[in-house]
Length: 322
Image (cartoon, rainbow, N blue to C red):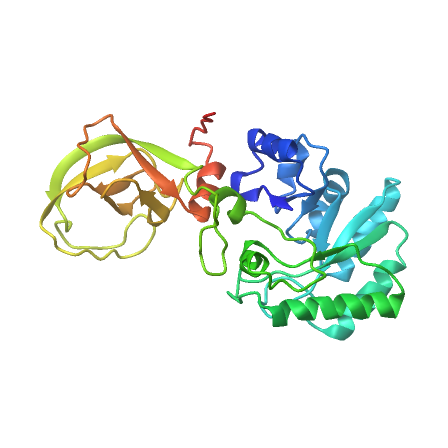
């Protein structure tokens, strides 16, 4: 399952998923599915809210769920429109984000879902590392397989999808330690940045610079490294702290916190983003390899979080090369 949320389901990138014929496209925002052009099954990754039930029925094929009340609403809405909707029940294996934690609740939910006329139980899944940082292991993912076997035995059914997590499960897959029976992973960061997320290792034959940021320099001056005067709150209500390094050569860039967290920008040059306001990022270029002038472009590699915020910002122009 290729995840599109980090690039806000940009259609030019969805077209690449279409060309590669991935099995599923997953996204956390129902809004991203509304205009998506694809014949690939669409999976809503964030649990549906009660206020978006009709949109879920109309704009995605499968949704991840853990609340029986929500599935009942999906069943009613699907019936009203003469449709069937598929669900994957999420099980919490200890990361403590979404998922059914109590075993009795799990079996009761399965029983009731199987009785719903307009809901198809497509499978079960789990999520790890995103909140609690719990790393996937053969032991905790083995528990997901045991739940699969118990559900199939107890209810005499076959579960088609056993979704064993996200890019943090790739380390197990690549080292042949992923428990047999897990047949689906929801991959985002590993696709766009070529990195598994359990240990942060890069994956062979992938690239980490497919997404880059280019920012225009709008000021370039030598200034002190500590503001002059009594220090109070900044624009975001926090009292900043500064290290006195004397005068430094500083570049002011034409984007700010509204667009991206400067701490998640990875310079190509020996420069350092040192701070930001809403609309400006300040970069120390005192030790840069390159020589800069006002109007020049400064380039950065990106993290998963910075890609997400930059793709979300309407003030950042997206250019495509190749």
